[in-house]
Amino acid sequence: MTAAADDTELRDRLAIDDLYTQYAFALDEVNLEMLAACFAPEVEFVPGAPGVPPRTGIKANQDRLVERHREKAFRERHMTNPPLIRTLSGDRAEAVCEYVIFQVDSGAPPRLVSMGRYEDSLEKRNGRWVFARRRSFRDQ
Image 1 (cartoon, rainbow, N blue to C red):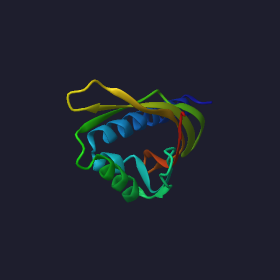
Image 2 (image 1 turned 120 degrees about the vertical axis):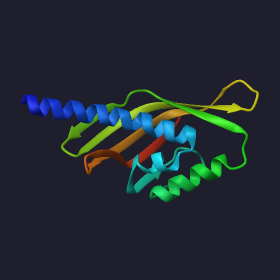
Image 3 (image 1 turned 60 degrees about the vertical axis):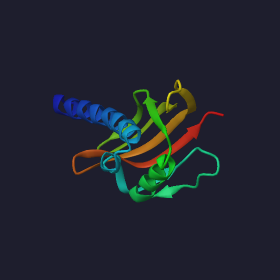
Image 4 (image 1 turned 180 degrees about the horizontal axis):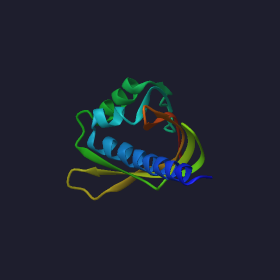
């Protein structure tokens, strides 16, 4: 492998790691623009929550986020570990990471509401890494 290839892979790995942080921050802040930037337009999201159907497209993901936070007096904090990048080849990658979600109700201490892992297919588009498919698996 050449030094240039090593440099490109390192940059890609750092950008993928940053994408996971951006996703969690966008959710916590209900920042729809930042959230949209994390995904391919036709993203497929397969949630791990019982009764929540799969969604396709950025708008469907944003609508679900807004619906969950509408008229609720709580904040969430998403924590993800650095992703394990299983494959990285050119403009495609497969990665997995674990997550925990805490909910903070007004005036109450944080409580754990969910934990599990994401299994993701990522693509590099226009020089940026995005989630093309995200599967969530909740621990029971």
